Amino acid sequence: MARKPHQRGDHLTRQNSQRGFSLVQLIITLQLAGIAALIAAPSVRTFSAQYQLSSASNQLGFDIVRARMQAVGQNQFVRIRMLSGVQYVRETSTDGSTWSNQVTKNLPSGVTATPTSAQVQFDKRGFTTVNNSVTLSNSLGRVKTVATSIIGRVTVA
Image (tube, rainbow, N blue to C red):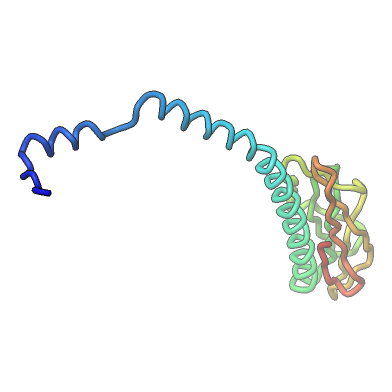
């Protein structure tokens, strides 16, 4: 079989005819992307709610540890007290009875705490004098508990 030599115009015509997408290909691709997005949306919501819960429990645990370090470092009583289901405050006291507000923080949206009256209080040596655990829950009903031991160890479970 003899090969036909390429002509200059033949190569350009073939290259130009295969550029881009047809309208039908574009519509099919967009429909498939839409279906994939609908399938993935519930997973994204679940992941986001779990992330918010983990973030809130880690934030609260960190603030409790920070309160203990502040109690020892500044030779004061320090406590973390829930103001509501979505807000807590770090307070200090020199005598353990008169408290002043230091920092108020909000939990991430979609996360609530129970009991709303919970508090963790440290004496000047860093030991807990009032020891409560705080349970955080998200919109999916998942929970994490931030607990403090008598010696001030914080666990998130």
